[in-house]
Each structure stands twice: as C-alpha cells, then as structure tokens.
Image (cartoon, rainbow, N blue to C red; front, side, top):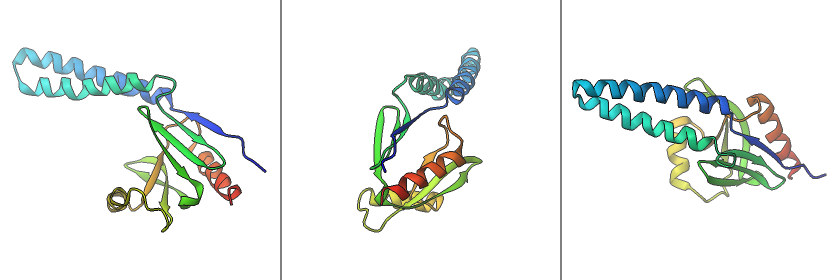
Length: 153
C-alpha cells in the first residue's frame, strides 16, 4: 500500500516573530548611530540579515518538508535535501536549546556527508535532524515519519 505524499509548510508565525524582533533591533542599531558607535553598525548588519531571511521564508516555495514513499525532502531557503527512508536507522524526538526536533542517525551504508555527520554527532549526539517549525506538531510528525519508514520496507 502506497502512502500519499505529504507536504508541510513552514510555520509563518515563527517567521513573523523573527521579522519583528529583527526589525526592533535594526531600529535600535539605527538609534545607536547617533552616538557614532561601531556596535550600531554591527547590530544593523546582523539583524538586517534576519529581516532578509524572514522575508525570504514567506515565499511559498522557500521552505517545506515533503514525505514520500521513497524518503523525505527538506527545503530551506530554496535549498533542498532528500533522504531515503532506507538511509535512516530510526527517528526519535529530542531538544536542542529548548527547541523540539526529530533526530536520526544514518545507517552504516550511508556514505554521503561523512564529515558533516561527524560534526553533527559531536555537537548534538545525532547525525541528522528535522526541525520542528512546520505546520504539524512534533509528535504527530515523528509518528508519521516512523509510519512512512515502516511502510517503505
């Protein structure tokens, strides 16, 4: 039995919050320019990038998670990455800095991104992760991904 492909879009509320917070800090940076401090320029530059990223994320095709019979595709800032279900050992829920995520390790047969997997494993204890910023609850997404993986065998 085949699964219907499912696409989950980025949570627009999180993008809006990023936009608003970045805008406030850019405004603060502009106000700091009156004191002729270099810190004002740093704040404007850093949070200005936050504004740009948040605006890009509002584009309908900029970010999503797509589940298919073959695997899952994550797309962020128009860059996509596809992972086959067979390349994943198992999925589990976890947290990084209070943010819920779905973590996984790759099978031993998976030979891509060797150094990237080592860095990720060192930093988080896991080789891969799917962020929890889509329009579905983390627990529901975890169960759905496990179901797709199980049916792919």
